[in-house]
Amino acid sequence: MAGTSFPNPATWCPATFRHMPQPKELDPYTNPRAFYGCELRRLREAAGLSQEQLGERVFCSGSYIGQFESANRRPQIDMSRVFDQLFGSGEHLERLCRLAGKSKVADYFADAAELEQRATAINEFAPMVIPGMLQTPAYARALTKSVQRFAPNEVVEQHVTTRMERAQLLTGSDRPLFWAILHEASLRVPLGGPMAMHDQLMHLVEMARIHPHIILQVLPFSGGAHPFLNTMVSLMQFADAPPVVYTEGSYTGQLVDEPALVADFQSSYDLARAVALSPEASLALIESAAKEHAADEHRT
Image 1 (cartoon, rainbow, N blue to C red):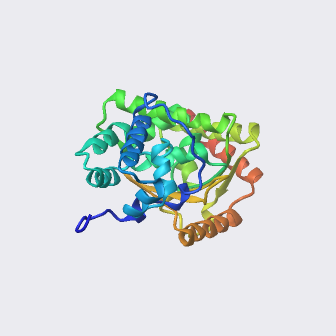
Image 2 (cartoon, rainbow, N blue to C red):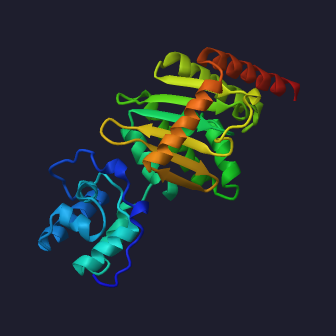
Image 3 (cartoon, rainbow, N blue to C red):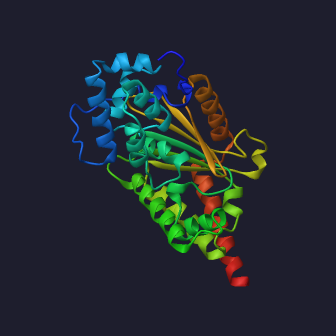
């Protein structure tokens, strides 16, 4: 492997996954990701390497290799190319990776979407728009159309459907504790028109009042400057792995698992929580904003 150029391990070997449990057996015909995992395991064993030994060759932990083999981790193109070069398998794993990596969500969000399903707690900060898992179809549709202005209707509707499927996590049997801090600006931007905003805000109130594991706070304009004002932030905690942070801007997103940076994000989130209105006062403000949007509808 002398002279081989490897990708930066920091971009594809997060510590988050190193201690997650792995299933002992995998049916290769369940889905493309399972087939990828079984093929990686077959090639590794044919080369006489353990997971730890393969991890050492590609600068990663053995348990992280296990995440690929057990289909708990979405395959990565860069690593698949390295595997193919190591095993002399042509482009076999790279091609399987492209098949297994298909996702309903944007590529930059795919890994975070998977982590949401495993999180025991999710803390979000929303500066300008309502968090995705709390959006109504009308709001999600208006937001998608504003972001993908030239997309055909079927593409827009697929995005809306996917977002509604994600929302089911908050009411499922394995639902996480979901704590969201919404900047007051997100209550005021009239996405979809006054009635769509009214319905969206009342949906927030209903979700928070019906489900005790959903906690909402509003950071009012009077709260002043904050590190997250231009960035959506999601902090995820797990029962069997270190916490991670997902940040998102327009057309891009990033997972952060460096402990020091995660701690910085957590400190900033705690500060926002301290400055924000109480949950009850927040719901009152959300409900008041909903009534204002309804009044705007009647005036037009």
